[in-house]
Length: 294
Image (cartoon, rainbow, N blue to C red; front, side, top):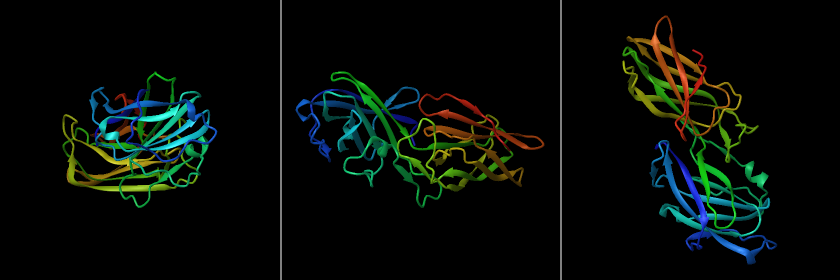
């Protein structure tokens, strides 16, 4: 999967007829004072390079004005890179975007903003990773101005680095203790739903990952997992060292964040195998150290 985050730009423009409006504005909303807002859709990698939006399969929008529900949009022409939504000129507006996901089920015809924020996705029958979708929101500024919206991935990505010892060979990985569900729209406190249960994902590597002296032996996207809250979470690595079966366990940090990369890296072998878990956000490529437990 590309290392990218999704950026949407809002500006004043003409209404695009190919954008589908599924629900009408409430009868007491200021329909007489509507204006089209133009959106430019593109993706941006960590180094700032712009790419197309080919990774998207769907795009939904839920609009609110002055805290009241305005409308739901099923945006059909996102692949062209631009689209428009018709919104009231007056009032404080906030739009929630959801990509690569179905329209949210179970919402009332006029859902409150808090009801939308409480929506949860449950990963059912997922054997080796949690399903990935993207979401985000932003307050829309006054008519004629531009608003940037960044969509974030619903998952944290687990990468694997076999370290610098060529005698180390990794054949399997397991992660346990992550949550089986997540809020559709991420929380700043990284809390997980109260009903969340612990889930375990396993993966057997089709080709063993061998350590290399230059530390370049890596596999990206071994797992994609939802935030774990305060649940104890660990990664178990199985393989061989110099032909002898070995197993290593690493403790993941609490409150793992969606849209971040967590790299499990094995160190050189002494009396025991050691390593680190390095955390980096997809957005800017920064690095945060984490304490491992082996």
